[in-house]
Image 1 (spheres, one colour):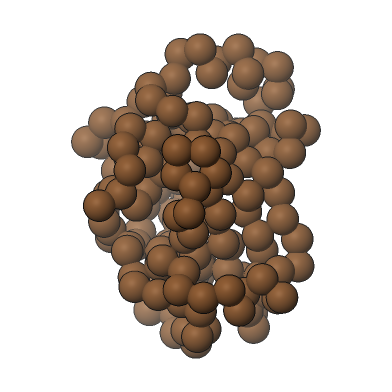
Image 2 (image 1 turned 90 degrees about the vertical axis):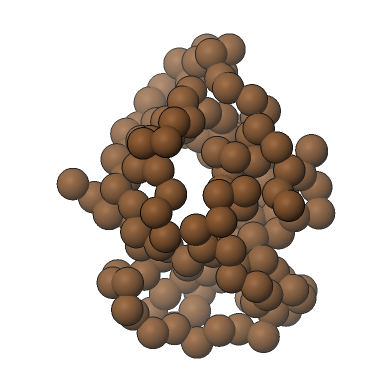
Length: 153
């Protein structure tokens, strides 16, 4: 079983932009969003697609299973989605031995910018960059599965 240990923050400044090493376009949608798990399909740069199953939000640690699927099949499954297709550009910012992923949302969520950092353990220390805002780890309304249904509060 694979675990995802991730912290989420709102972004409060633009200082990360000059540090971005790479970015990709992401379109993602959800086939299921229950109190136990979410099932997501993500298409990256229209070139590859992934089916991901995650346990429901429970702080910073969740079970995660991810599988590659043909892009054509992912597009066909889009008709079975619940809610909106989330569109965003993900920027990768190296940070010591770690990496920030900055999601700049488009469409219905334009203006929302969230930074995520995946950690090897829940107690791994990391330096907070000055462009980082309020932590939203564990607040469901800031998770993409909920964003597909509503705007965060």
